Image (cartoon, rainbow, N blue to C red; front, side, top):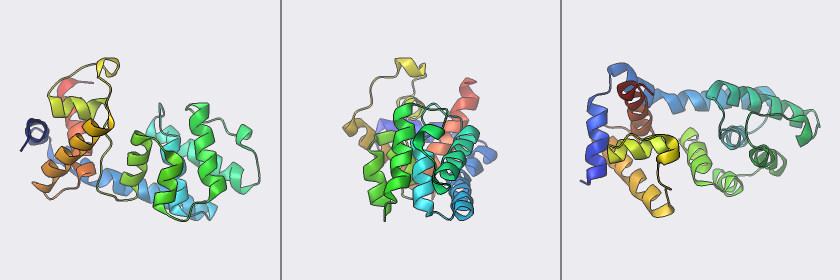
Length: 195
C-alpha cells in the first residue's frame, strides 16, 4: 500500500458517519438529478450528464444544475448557444453545446467530446464508472498536504492515474468505489481544515 493510500485512509478514518454517507450517495444523487432533467427535456441521460460535466468548472453545483437545465431548454426549443449564459468559461459552454448538438450514442463518445481529465472523470463518476476526480483537494488528501488551490502542483496524467488507483484501493478496503472514497474524504478534509 502506497503512502498516498495510507494518507487517504487516515482522512477517511476521521470522517463522520454523515460524511461517509455523503460520499456513498453524492454521485447517485447527481445521476438522479441528471435523469430527472433528461426525462423533463426528453434527452438521453448521458447527454445531460455530459452537459452538466462540461458546465462544471468554476460553477457551484446548484448553479451548475440550473445552467444545464437552461441550456437543455434552449437546445430543445431550437435556440442558439449564444442564448446560453452559464456561470463558467465560454469554452465550456461551447463544449456543453457540442454534446447536445452531437447527441452521442455512448458514454465513451461523450467522454471524447469532453476531452478534459477533470470534466471527463466527473462525467464518468456521475454515470457510475469507478474512477474519481483528482483536483487540488484530492491531491492534498493523498499527500497529507494542505495548500491553497493555486499552490497545488500541476497534476499530470501519470500522477492522476496513480492517485485514482490509490483512491480505488482505499475504497475497496471499505466496500466503496474510488469516487465514493474521494467524495467522503473531500467533505471530511474540508471540515478538518475548515476550508
